[in-house]
Length: 440
Image 1: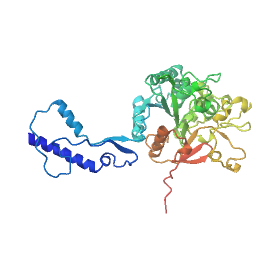
Image 2: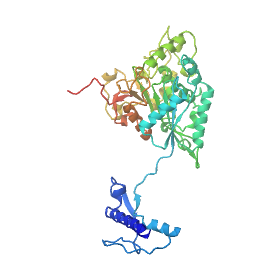
Image 3: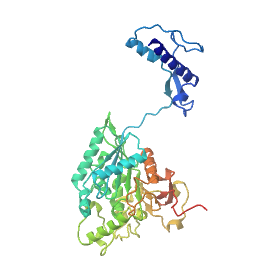
Image 4: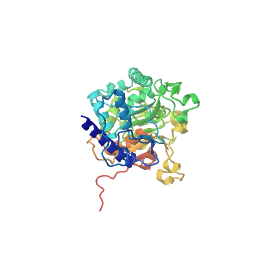
């Protein structure tokens, strides 16, 4: 027994001697630089009976004696090779929450599978907690019912309770991601009150930086407790929401609580195409839609029409001037008095202006539109992992998934992300050639 125990100790000492020759760091951190890693405690001095020196002979025999627990602990301490200290270490981020609001005809099971697939492909860090907000999204042939359910007070109350639970858990940062009809739930809970103040749910978030007026509105904390949340990102994926309603009041309700709003749309989204036709027909035959979807010129639209949505008409998300329409609908009153969105903080500065160049007027016509201050991602040219409807591929397409990861982890705007190409106004597209493009 003594001989076997002595051999085990000798193997440990030989390994430690090898680790010492490699400075310990190379064994544990082979890619770390000398500036990043330092050894705060060197190998302890040899104890009697241990061969730590350069001698190649056999170690002296150790008397056979009974080991006590304190002796075992001392031996473990003696066998400790190095204690590493990483310089300039930055403590991990506080816990954050990613709230996913699914769309029409999406069961809880399916929504969990979709979000789980996305998180797995994004390799979402453990400090970001994914959450599905399950709301009555309807089933087949119940679209207008689901739309009304999204706009109910009960739905807004439940979303507020979710945010309250995050505050109680000590979470400060929130990301919100919606898909398709799920955007109507978000618009309902965030819509400003008639007097222009934020809704009760939106008041649970601190104001966006450029909307703050005092120090009391800049912190999530009151003392040592979380009082309000920081809404870091809003992602609207293939959103089913009228363009005119979004321009008139929807965007302003979101922008005062979040400065990083991303809309991902596809000009060939067939599911949204059928939604546009169906909503236009129901409006024509007198089926009322929720107030949050209405806009001033709705009553003036003639006959059966398509109610165009921002998920397909991604190039129409700008403020109209007095001579043009916001969504192909004439507006009679002065735009300066009609729209909430004339606050300069809601207007997107084009990339040309941000870089200090004067944009050629011929690129956009005689007058540059007032693009809304959000990032529009055009996914029309993407072809991988996309089904025929081109409506639900955000959790499978690797280009999209990689971009989402960068959004959640860094909060960068589109102009700062390397995977995107600038098109015009507030519109970007992914830097990926279509499959028909080949090299010669």
